[in-house]
Structures are given as C-alpha cells and as structure tokens.
Length: 102
View 1 (cartoon, rainbow, N blue to C red):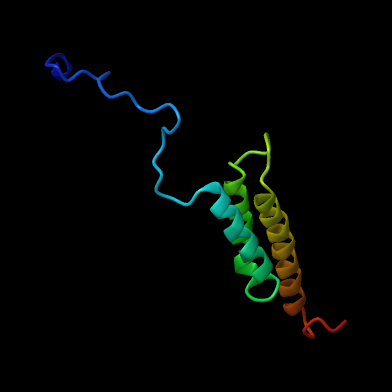
View 2: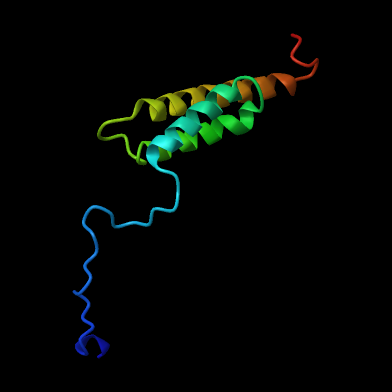
C-alpha cells in the first residue's frame, strides 16, 4: 500500500470550485460562436452552420433546459434551428423535378 509512506491521498485535496479540466472554450464563448455561426448560416452554408450553431448553443446552455439561460446561447440555439430548417426546405425544393418550379 503506497499511501502509507507519507504520501496520503488527502494531502492535496481537489478544489471544490473546479473539478474538471479547463482546456476547452467556456460557455460564454460557445454562445457567441454559436450566434455568429447562426447569423452567418442565413447567408452561406446554412446546412452546415445551422447545426453547428445548435450544438454550440446547447453546450453553452450547459446541456440542460433548467436554470438560467444565457442570451447568446438561446439566440444561437433558436437561430441555428431556424437556419437548419430553412436549409432543409431549400434543399428539398432544389431536389424536386423542375427545380422547384410547380
């Protein structure tokens, strides 16, 4: 048993405020990135940027509907969903015979 030689497991307790690694972007940054992707998705590559905005918004909200929701995260989620829906409708219309005419 290695813990008995003066190197106990309780010598360096983990901080209560932060128990995860801080390598990725924080929630506020994800919300802003998602909002930018959602707005840009209305103009170019909506089928790609829409789902990216939804994922960024969802992660910025903390992957839950409970609690307070930051405004950029909610905007990214809603605009990303609208953007994705419009891109799917546009692609379905472009795939019909006659290129959407009638």
